[in-house]
Image (cartoon, rainbow, N blue to C red; front, side, top):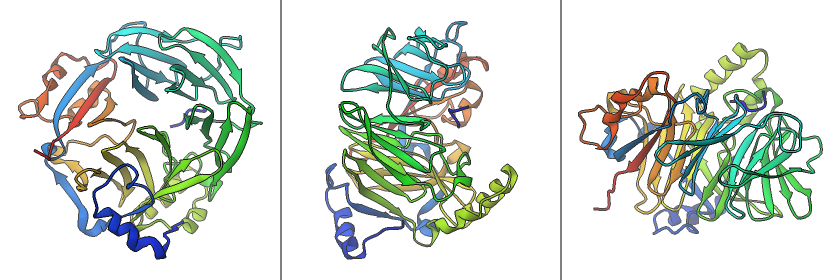
Length: 389
């Protein structure tokens, strides 16, 4: 199925970058910087939930015969609607903000208004349309209520595409899991590829856990970024080039890409080699989200997840494995809206992602008692603790 789940620090500018980190930040200040961390000293195994979040809201997605979700591939919240992609069912479900089911897009076939598979979806903020991408380079357009508008075939050659983001009204970035050049920058108006970038260090890592199923594209205000997780670099795509804006530096724990060439064989052999690399290196980012106020990311290190939260206003940094009482931090299928982290969780796993019902955390976590194990997933909204009071 198509929907699966260098170290280039310029020494001459490092001092300037470090000074920037100690200054008051604007969104522009948070570009062209090195984010350095001492993982031996900074990682906390457990922290109190309320150190990060002070409110949790649960939004159960309505369960019915028409709205039954098999697996959430991706979701978007826009214009008082929740859009949920279930790629296995080849369906896009639409709910209101209370989780009530509205309708779904499911038009499987080869006709002018149909598709055979769904690779990705986005809400285009420039034309206010839903855009549905197929792996074979078709893009279908719908209004926000799910009514069909048109279907285009994109001039991308024979490239199979899996994820995309709108950089501007004209420019689209496509990401391909199995291409040697992972990133394709395309012009709508010219209907052609402008350039390709980000070469895979080894085709043997394609389809492994080193390749996160989470979108590598990040919207921060009006800017769209791209994350190259293996190189720990954040770029701003433009019509002419990729502009590097951030790099994560973990010192001796930075992954040496030459070791990726040793990942060969079957699934078990590859998994074992990646596990060995994880014991000594940061090997993969499961997600990266950023907006004007926060950076939220999770990465694999020493065979577990490390979660990193940076408050760009106060410059506070937190690195930790999990919350107290074995409460997990969401590290996959994560969105960042203003001061709120949003994810989706199956009812059977929900108790591992929210505090105890007797906690003093604000919200409606007691509604968990009304859920059935086979109900649709729950949208979970975590509001950051206001440490500026």
